[in-house]
Image (cartoon, rainbow, N blue to C red; front, side):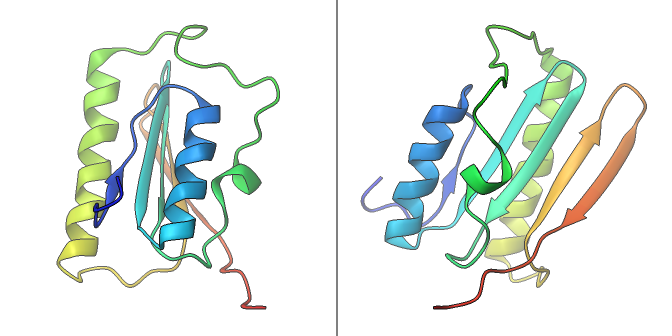
Length: 122
């Protein structure tokens, strides 16, 4: 990871994502998170160090990992394709939006974009 220019996360637990977020923040490496639980999925791209840290958005307490709530291949495929599109937009300078979470309800085919505030420089 030391020489990586960009990180795509697809691990199955929050503790590892917290660690990955911390390492990427310290190295100013963009990281693109994705997760799937049943029919729910999300994507969060932390492209700048002043974007909200992962632990501030997703709390560890009482949150299932993939061993507790099953996912299905088609859902994982959809979310990973959307994650890759976010990376492509980033690499080709086709996006200029601030931080957001893409929340996907695959059971009802609903896509929500939740806008987040950038943190102020101290």
